[in-house]
Length: 414
Image (cartoon, rainbow, N blue to C red):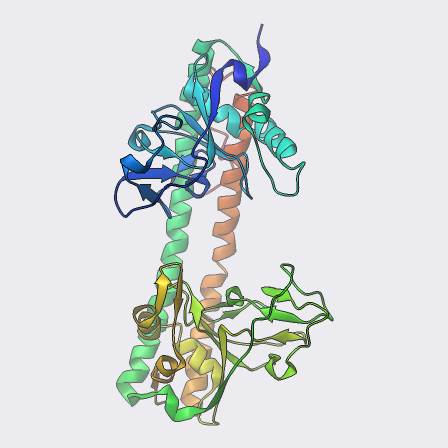
């Protein structure tokens, strides 16, 4: 008879590194929460340490088949099995699960199922900061068929999730191609203007620049009627998001001269190397949003339209200048000086030509934007089907020996 048993009866549960060791550019990979995402391990933002700096006596290196579970933060309860290519890595500030009485692939899928994941979320959110300890993880229930059936379920899920993942990769590739096409169209339009009219530095059209302040703010966004200070995330190339702000405490007097208005041309002076220099024009927006000290407001004379500058600044020429000219203590945050912004090469086009350029680029972007929601919807459906399939298989809701998985992607196109 199949039953549900606590995880601690099927595996040994231990802690990873308590404190991060000194890091280095080379050495042993450290798998942290940021490297774990729904059953997969990625190398994004990977940290490394020298072997001699690791406490191997209490946190030995990982072996293939162990499972890492995120123990704190926004992704508490997320998990991934250690595949062969990541064996020999160090466990970060995670929980490590070493199966001894169950198939490791089956156990990894079980921890990804809704029942186990929901249980981990429930017990970890009893405190203000989500946190999962070894005892709580050990009590998570796992459906326990025979080891032979566990292997059959794992084989089935390996094949079916790989098929769904392939479809997802095709959708992401399609989205990437849309982005590439938009960038290519924009650069072509800019190159044609430059070839016809040449370029002049932005400083030729400047009336001045404003910069706000960054007082200590609340972590929550400001409600309508409250003052808020814009975060650097409020700006992306060509896009302004007023919701990305932090509430100004009631006892702090707002600098009303720094309030943004419709039509303002804003440039981020501090962000990641990929986003520093992001430029956008403020659309119709609510009152009481303030510049921070990390955002420039550029004032232009009547010969240059703000939306023309914002559109040109999305192009390869200026984005490359921003990334190359940025400086900072790390690759996570870079800065540009306004002197560098003043040197941006702007096509010397008339106002009529500027307006025509902006309209053409906007029309091309709108055509591509109509395709993006379809791709995003397909990705959501694939993720939902993948999760539903895992949950059903690890709780015995269908017999994998007679299931083909042909219907798991019904209604989804590649």
